[in-house]
Image 1 (cartoon, rainbow, N blue to C red):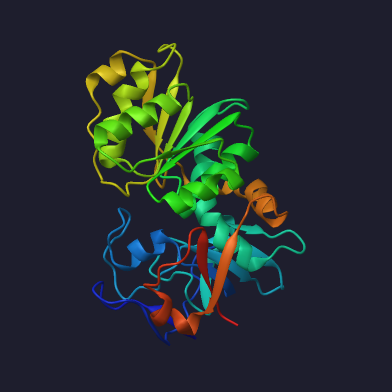
Image 2 (image 1 turned 135 degrees about the vertical axis):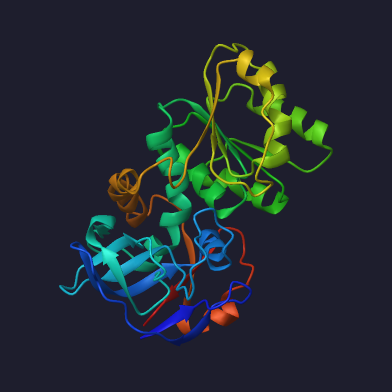
Amino acid sequence: MYAAVVRSFDSIPKYEKFEIPNPTGKYEVLLDVIAAGLHPRVRSQANDSHYTSDGELPLIPGIDGVGRLEDGRLVYFVAPDTPFGTFAEKTVVDLRRSIPLPEGADAVQIAAAMNPAMSSWVALRRRVDFQQGQKILVLGATGNSGQMAIQIAKFLGASQVIGAGRDQDRLNSLPALGADVIVSLVGEPEEVAERLAEASSEVDIVIDYLWGKPAESVMVPLLMKRSDRSKKLSWVQIGSIAGPTAAVPSVALRSANFQVLGSGQGSVTATGYIAKFPVLIDTIASGKLNVNAVTFSLSEVEDVWNTSFAPGQRAVFVTK
């Protein structure tokens, strides 16, 4: 078969022939990959920078996709924890980590949307007790996952969604996706923190894709502006685009009903993720979330790998 293969973490994947992997487990089968998304998580997998990486080479990147089983059924699947990912004509899948697609579902749309959507979907469904009518701040709302989080928060019933980010053009596009308020993170840190705290002081949940200094600088100002500091605020840390660490002042934890928790691999089991997939897949398949997929042949992987795409776009490799 052909696959995108990483043989050095200093080089991008190369399109080349590779031996077809063999199923070994009780629930494993070989399937034909139809479509797989080029997510940021895939790039970090391929350069060995993701926290789950084990350094094993050679590696076929790709963490999820849509494939066709031997009986013809299309499924969305999450790749097993092996070096044989989804950027290949064929891969091994554990059937327990696959979900059949509804009739008429667009494989490319599913492959493009599931990864950026699942972070906020699972966070709101499994990591916090989200209730309809609550208010949500999306910190880092101008990235693909952040833009999807805006849509998902509204879809699940948030009464107010605030989107914060640096790219003004992308910020300006967020109201069309459901944002009620947008906040620029450009400027002096103290001014930004004050501006963001003023806009989001009454939120119930923060979905944070940035972490680092933006999170660190706004925590206390936001908490101090709350009209009722005993009202619970859940800060869900998902991404760390702005830095891997953020100092959480002790006063933030003592002076308000404030909890900081993470959502990702490890804090939620694979079974926990998969349990939430069917409704999310149906939501995407029915067109209730805006998805902007750009397709490429897998053979173009070397040309496309480092491409910067337009706001909201997600590259999807197809094998046929």
